Length: 480
Image (cartoon, rainbow, N blue to C red; front, side):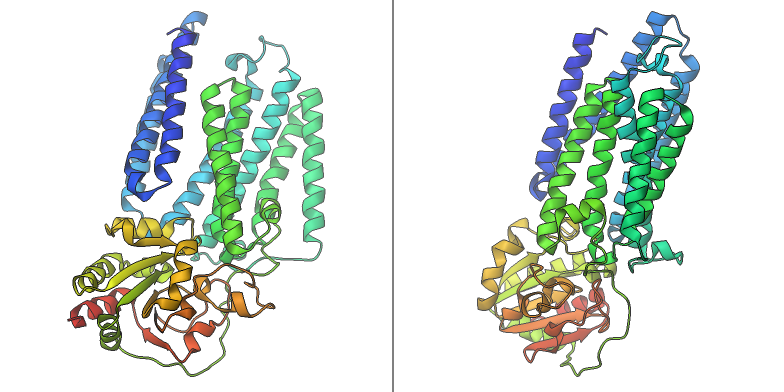
């Protein structure tokens, strides 16, 4: 296979990746976008294997064992990936994404160590000769970004899962005196050892630099609370892309550079959008310092005991059935209860009665960007009914009934009315403007931000307590 053919195939794979990103930007085209991504990756992998075989043949090397191990790894890894993707619950998708980011970061570190160990095998330098300084810079960057991505993603995985007792994995921020100064000193030390490696190609400073980078990944993420995890997931996605791109430069592999750059830039753009949605500083997110500025994770503490107006599923069904316009606000509680299919049935019944039904989606509803969109798509909800926050906020004042299902912070009026609130300034779905509000929750427990929600205590709000799936199924039966 000539280099011109390799370049052409890599170009085709790159176009597929670009089309994948374009397709994934809209639920209607998400399936075709996924298909483009899979085709592009298949082309990239097969082309790279063919290139390895060609180079090995030119050197007279026997690759039978190496290729056997490579294909075995592809089969085993592909089987594990397919199994996990088929079995993962929608509520566990954010943890899965964080886990995948960690593996990308670790892969970048492993490749960098392989290159430093055997530079001649990767064509960076003749046998016994030092690696060019420019390639050492690329290896340094790819290694420390990959190490930070790996350890940071592991912490994010633990915080998102919420089932581990280890303190670093708990939702509440882990803060201590001099935290930022320690992070700064470690970053400077990492940079110093990286410079020594770039000047000498010595192993010891390279290993120390990597160890510091692993530690920094932990220290950057632990002060960030559960409320901000959607942004962290997006940020780590960006980091993993840049790590891959850095290693791509070292390997002189244009496919890795392009794919990594696409992931890195799209992740950075998404992080910026999420920061705007949560009223956060983009640069503080990149530096991992915003978890203790407010909006920290839910503390799980006791909330103020205040009277609320509660009702049954039958009461809620009566209100919905007699409304002309209904807006549904899905939240993480809906995903936990796996109630999206029951909600689709309720929506269909309301539409059959001539009621105008719409869905309102907040950019950070759930635990990762697009979580609610995917949840509704899984239930085959007509996407014409789904509206983003900026498009539907102006309609709440004319809405007869808003049905809030498991959402909390994203509909909390404190963001608009209380300048001292930790979510002050965060754009919210303005459900409080509707004529009547129905809220379904298991209890009066706080959301990620650990705040009481004034929406629940308004005179026009009716709370319906219980599992979302059971409550919605009862509503379906009661709607006439």
